[in-house]
Length: 233
Picture 1 (cartoon, rainbow, N blue to C red):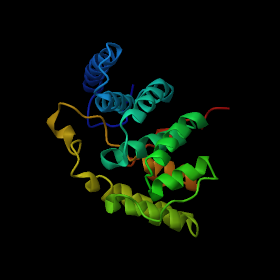
Picture 2 (cartoon, rainbow, N blue to C red):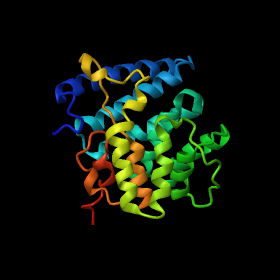
Picture 3 (tube, rainbow, N blue to C red):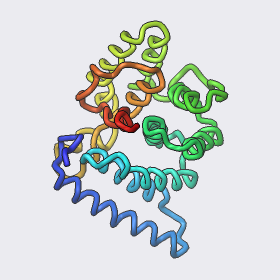
């Protein structure tokens, strides 16, 4: 198995999966015993398990069950304040991997119920549900996500320029724009590293119909997710 995020080894990723599996089991047992707390923690460990699966190079098909389980936990606690990026990742992954409408709809319903207004959310949702009305022309967190607006607007006029702007985002803005998050630079400590992935970049490529051949191999770009079904007849 060839790792996709090469900042950790397969052995290190396997160790993490075992640890996350134990954490997931702990919180699931709590809920089975009637202690309905820690849904955010259960969500966190399920999501991190999913990220590690992708980072270590597992087949895309292996991600499906965990994706479904991650989504099931979200209605218990989700708001865009504190969990914005997690929703962005899950929307993006669902779109790239062509998951069923009902799965994506469950995310959309949460966004609607919490009245979360964000340009990228709207752009991704409208790809799957064209009747969705754009709620805003702004992003909730301009640093670094303002670039997504520029990429989307460029794509309407010049798709090649849109790809160039997306490349700049990947190379110079995305990772740096998350320097305040706990996972930034975590690979340097050799303990936990789920992988660094700009999932919205892949989703935008699909939604906007961009040619991403120049992005293949770039750090943070989830090329395998965008092209997971290229060889499926």
